[in-house]
Image 1: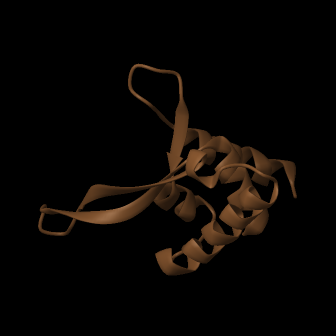
Image 2: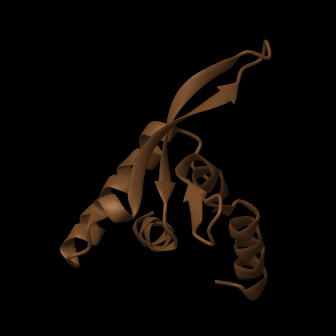
Length: 101
């Protein structure tokens, strides 16, 4: 992988990090990571997430500590909001997704 691409992806990854309120705990939303990794369909990205969860289990880690299912609201064209499924990811979960993608 070229240095320029790695630098670009690292900047994009850092740009979507969130921090849990009143803590220093970092997390990422799977839908945000999906875009960076070039997946246009959520259902296709979920296949990669499932493989990452399997890898997590295979090393003896608890997937519930690294992949947390959530619902969040997104704006639609009319300005209204609708709920969508998402997943909160730890840095380790993001690594596993990148490895399985």
